[in-house]
Amino acid sequence: MKNILMTVGAAALMASAAHAEISDNVVKIGILNDMSGPYSALGGQGSLEAAKMAVEDFGGTVQGAPVEVVGADHQNKADIGATIARQWFDAEQVDTIMDLTTSSVALAVQAIAGEKQKIDIVTGGGTSDLTGKACTPYSFHWAYDTHALAVGTGGAVVKAGGDSWFFLTADYAFGYSLEENTTKTVEAAGGKVLGSVRHPLNNNDYSAFLLQAQASGAKVIGLASAGLDTQNAIKQAAEFGITQGGQSLAGLLLFITDIHGLGLDTAQGLYLTEGFYWDRDDQSREFGKRFMDRTGGMPSMVHASVYSAVTQYLKAIDAAGGDDATAVAAKLKEMPVDDVFGRGAKVAANGRLMNTQYLMQVKTPDESKYDWDYYKIVAEIPGEQAYMDPAQSGCPLVQ
Image (cartoon, rainbow, N blue to C red):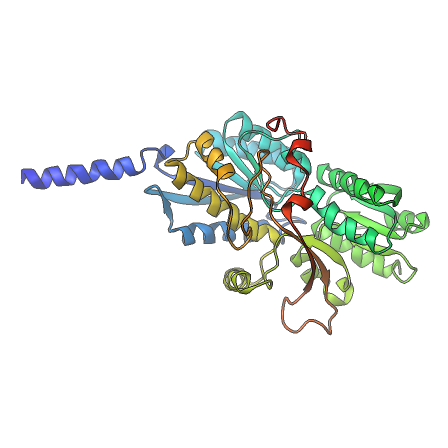
């Protein structure tokens, strides 16, 4: 009997030690994004499902502790996002927050995470400031940023002869950053920016803005927006006969969910830059079909990057032997990323995942052979070319 008790006691001690370095004996991952507004299709519930897929594929536990995923809607408002983040960190023992569509929310939450020494991994927000002046030792940017979009789509359009631009810009941090980065790319290539106009987030009527763009005479109207804002602008530009009049549209941030919403008749020929396409190879197709079975749609770049970020975070906890944020952050910057989203990618000193970006063109209806067969891959852009040199990013962590 004594031996049995000793064996049971030893087993209990071993089980306790297995997750003694996991705070609260559970790893809790928060997915904070737009669940009901203009960016809900590209992130939303799909990001929550992608996070759950990653946890299940990892085995549901790390270092002997269970992994939980929670979600919330920040409604694209920085104050709401900040309030949820504080509640999660202070009262609900959330260890990390991910996704963070809408750059203004991402910046607010990242500041709080840095203050509380908690890890945040942005997959939905786009401003390059996240790994620039706003970087922290605990912050990471995973999917794309405005610099990469400018290099990809902006650079390709200028190279194709689109050397004069007018911007329709979403009136918040992401839009400003995308316009600024694309302007630099256009001007560096010898082009000119003839003007810009800002529109509210989640806008419905683009007639006045499109008339200004049309009157500018610019060859290219750059849409520095995302989600339903970009879709609505493209649809209304078609109604105004913008492209028939000789001007071109450049959707500077488009997702496969946008193309699905627009339809190929409207979206055909558009260039765009993304970090993931479900139909690129066998690995991405397998992931895409699993995601489709669970959600009814193919994964966007954001969905795939959430899966990647959650997987890598759990790997970093495993490698660190616990969920201490300083140790996990060090492992995230040390370990290569090699999964369905990032193939042999590395995390730079400023927290930027230097993943490959793909310049793509939307197929015509005749070229598309099956459901969600939307893209032709025109070029691959290595991470070192797509993203800003970390030493030039303005991040105080990089000497």
